[in-house]
Image 1 (cartoon, rainbow, N blue to C red):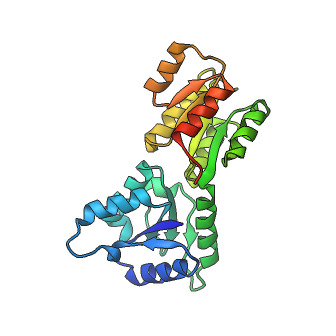
Image 2 (cartoon, one colour):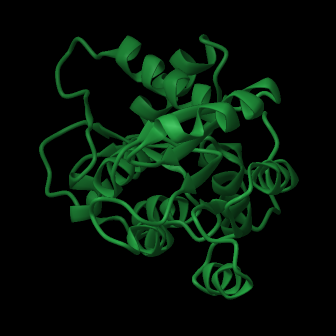
Image 3 (cartoon, one colour):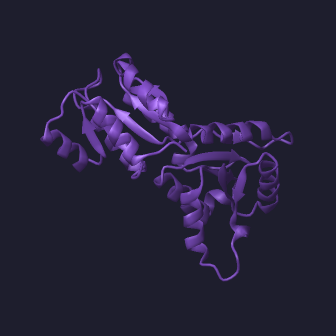
Length: 243
């Protein structure tokens, strides 16, 4: 488990949090880990790319900090899970405000809640989000992939899928195309996902295997599209591996 702590001037809490998390065998990185002579901007980017989640300490200083804003925005763009920790009442960015926070304003700080949240997020490291309004159709495919070490969360709609994606860092996404919401709902989901996550592998398991539909899916940002179980399994295992 590897988390990044983003903060502004609240160094004491950041250090205490680092100690508490490391006592739980959670690897923590914060800016004081930068060695002398290192390009700190590049180092921060690399650590954000490498982490499983980013903890953002929210207070009057951090919400105004361009560095803190850059860190959580960069991490969001890389598909990382953001864990807001509210230290004091403050005006939060609308993207952060939409996320469930952990309340650290009182004297009895909920360390267990924070630690459990991190472990739950990292525990999703082998999990693929499968979006289909009739999931019973994919039981055998999921069983085959589970034998290869993958796990699955199921979503029945675009709305449910997007809600799950705000709190969980998935390994990949599989979606059907036509749902109750619309005939091209798979593309609606793909478009929304790509607004904030350019890198997560996205696959369509749908009714068509026509070359023109495969090309269209890739042009819109998917890694592949098929209606064959064997081809789907090959695509998944060639793009991602269980951690």
